[in-house]
Image 1 (cartoon, one colour):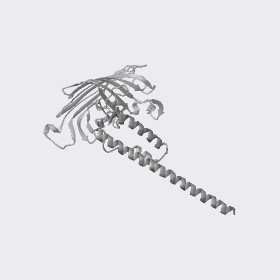
Image 2 (image 1 turned 90 degrees about the horizontal axis):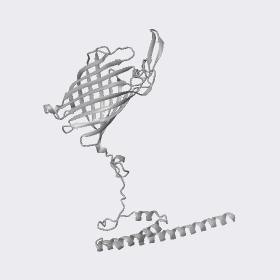
Image 3 (image 1 turned 180 degrees about the vertical axis):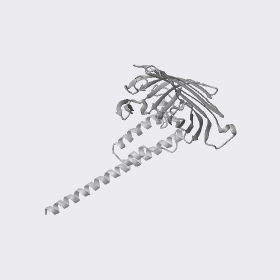
Image 4 (image 1 turned 30 degrees about the vertical axis):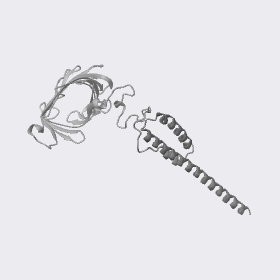
Length: 355
């Protein structure tokens, strides 16, 4: 009897629930049909009046919004779908103040909008990231960028990360030949700077003076790497670049000046390269940007500890640069070291991504 009575209660409850659900579904369906009829009525009025019915736009839409809110409170997915319904014919001439609901477009960032009170634009930025390696300095990563502040002047900044362990912290150890210096990977030379870039001749000629700050363990101590220091030196530099449809060239000069503690050593680093482009010979569909000659020089200019100065290396040789897809340039240079103490030959390769 208990089992039969429980089964009877279960069936009765299920039937009542089905009836309730059916009644709720019928009510929602009726309200949905009423809402659809109301929408069609409003569309007909707008078309008939040519979109000039401001009273309909203000009062009628308010009433619709209140009805929509009431339906949304019912929690019906069908109601949610209908509220988001957009008529195929837009009332373009409807004179109703509309708030700016578009927001910031997806393809724009903080530097494309003036909504927050700044005026940066990404079209004014230019620069690139370079991965470089050569026979003396080893692997390097360089970021250079500029922002146009006037029609012919850019604000420029850069970061040059030198990764040779010979420029880092060192330790004195005992070896088979007596006391030796073992260079490590801490305190690596890090260079950052900024300046102005002046553009002439329709941007074919640029002159870019900059001032950089050196951080690390190379310039300031008698023993390289004995101390790791921020702002151990400064580097004023000048870069002149010429680039047109047929000829390209660059001249770079920098002075690495120690300014802290023992102020052990200063360097001068400079290069010149000149090349021609395939367009000069009317070559088409050639993935070569330019071919030319590269000369580079590094001088140990001042030694305030022992007085030993002179040229470290003096490179000269041909180079070739390829233009790759996605604004990538591949450059390779090789040749002879006229000094011949570091090595009788040199090589240098770089990959630059322009943006």
